[in-house]
Image 1 (cartoon, rainbow, N blue to C red):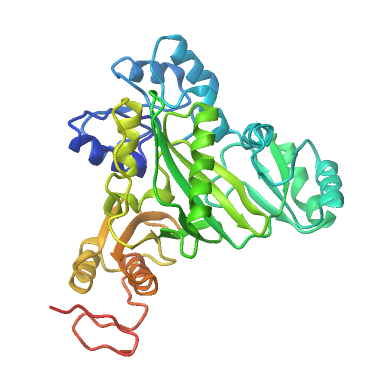
Image 2 (cartoon, rainbow, N blue to C red; image 1 turned 135 degrees about the vertical axis):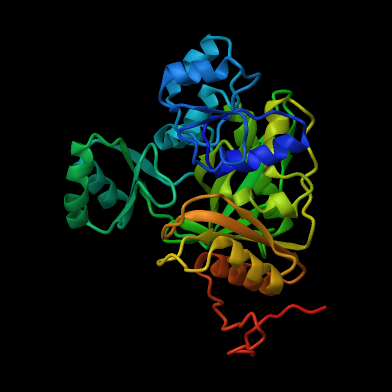
Length: 397
């Protein structure tokens, strides 16, 4: 797996269960995956020589991010390396303009869009489609980075010149009026077998996913099936091998595709503890061309809450925070990524299972907040002295 982040770290856990040896190409030894993975090469994903040396000892190469240059991937394929997903497929997750153009050609709903060479292109698009508009870097953006919401021509004049001067490749698209954001997660093998998990709702704050609700509440059976079939159709059409996450806008006019990711994805972390087969095991099964696993949810409601670094580093260490968390929520499932904490950074996630959405969601949110800040948002005292017992959720039994 090229990339040593938390996705590779969690893939390592799945590889152990399958009896596989995961070889990781990481930029440095302190990334999340090298901290738990014995088979690590140090090198940069933009260095073709490092990629070739790494791939020489691998049966199949896959990714925990989309940032390997396309020309390097084509060089590996020319060398006879088995790469999943292949460069022709992965390009659609690397370049938003390529993705928009291909999906539109397939008749799949995407926001109205146009390539951008200068500010005049954005102004003309805004005049035709209305303001505000969304300008995106075609490559490299994530978690709200590389995205600019521009309200008018004045905003264009303030933002675009610096981006154009820096040589940033851009597109502009219409801001979509939506009810919520959904994600359809599927997997596809080289044999052509496909599998899909329940469609989820993702909750974003400042462009960062904070919660995933599985299955998406109040989504009809018909609409859920349509989202799953759409994602499988995209996987087949683009030749994806591995996990594919399709981020969707739920609008009055129907589902609109926002983004694609061809790897395990934040919207699928709930599957580790909440589904029969996790997205990480499924990704390995797919790239190894094993039969794909069952994708059923293990409870009526599963909520995953991201742990985001607090504004101020807590004095209480992670170990002590886990101690208090498990004392209060014995059923909490935690994945800690081994990352240095800083404000807003994803340092882990918590998964809760249950029957009632409001209860499970509140418990997951409380747990994630405590792991980030070492404070109970509802005033709960670990020694039993609840300052706000009306809102406190305690442990029984």
